[in-house]
Length: 572
Image 1 (cartoon, rainbow, N blue to C red):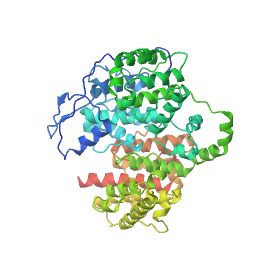
Image 2: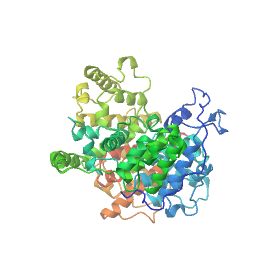
Image 3: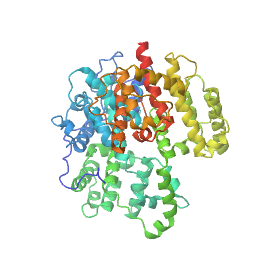
Image 4: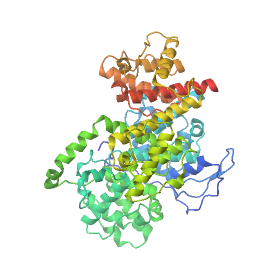
């Protein structure tokens, strides 16, 4: 894979020692920002380092080992980035990571590495002359990460400029995880079908989280190596290094052996495992201390790195023939518009910071609990949790949950005609996507109504009228006018760029804007308008393809977010 490190010249291990884990000090219940970010960061954070100077005067904990691991990996993946010349490498033995992110450039480049093209590089302020330039960069980074499904609740530009440790580490970890998991897919590795259990189909593999797929991959190789051990977590199961030893010897037998098993001291054995990692160019993320301590987050990152570098999967010819039709159908569905829409909806929900991440939207909605959680985010006083059977495996209870979710949608004023709880529980893709779309639209409209829009219910025509008025009065000619969110003029991206300019006359560099005539020009403008909106502070989830293909649902959310930004500025 393109993002796999070469076997030659591996990076040396970080020289930092670690300290024993100690519990973080108690925090006030009102500090939801800290609690959520620490939850994202993980539970194995190390000793508290310093007193935070924030309003609460609270202590924050962060793992020194994560600072070193993340800094080293950033140095590796962004080593040749021209935007970061003179800014890298970051010293992994210090707290320089927190100051390195202060300008916002590094985070923008890391996010674009995780999902190429999501940050339009010409929208980044490379020359920082004022604090405003930093704020714009961080807005761009935060909202681009949000579009990837990262939880950025209560993370603001000022937090990142200040280098607030737990928020920086929480965000950086989420971005790195997106990057590491990007190729853990059936599309990139068709041979993953060998991980299917008896009686399973390809669709069952798609229901698994990336963590579950990696566990199956490890266990597949352990069985092939004749090892009786199985991996069920990335913490305690890893501590004795036996699983790593068998796994690495199996996937890279030319360089790795079972010799570490002869060592009985856990830390010395882990050190031998890392010597093998050195040989194959994978000495990243973990130290011997991390392995022995069972640092689940860093072990997960290291396992994903091994998979990306040496998947060592081969699809037997008979299995390939057996699944060929099924695989072709899945790949065709992967390219379908509905799947792209599903991805947008999934990322929108994941950005809310719910109790668990959404992996497969349709499958995860089938218990009803996810939809109820989404409604609670949109209308906190509407949900009665006594009506919900949490974490139930009983189908009839799941249908009852889905019925309640549909009822809640009705109570919100959504049109859910011909949608029943059983449709959701059965995984009816068309109806589930329709329901989630209405929830997403309600989120945009709710924001506008809360900012004092003229009508109790904001319609598409209201958004169109507002956008046309803004562009007409923006002080720059050539913006044009649109009649609906299906107007073909939107495909060029120019109208949307004029709309961004109307809200902030410095956010668009017109020397970059193209005529929007060719497909390449349309793509450039579409990517630019999304980054311009995010740079101003808009959390938009659509892709540039939604712009050039004129997808009315997604374009409505884009204009709605800009209108909400305009109203919020007027209210301030």
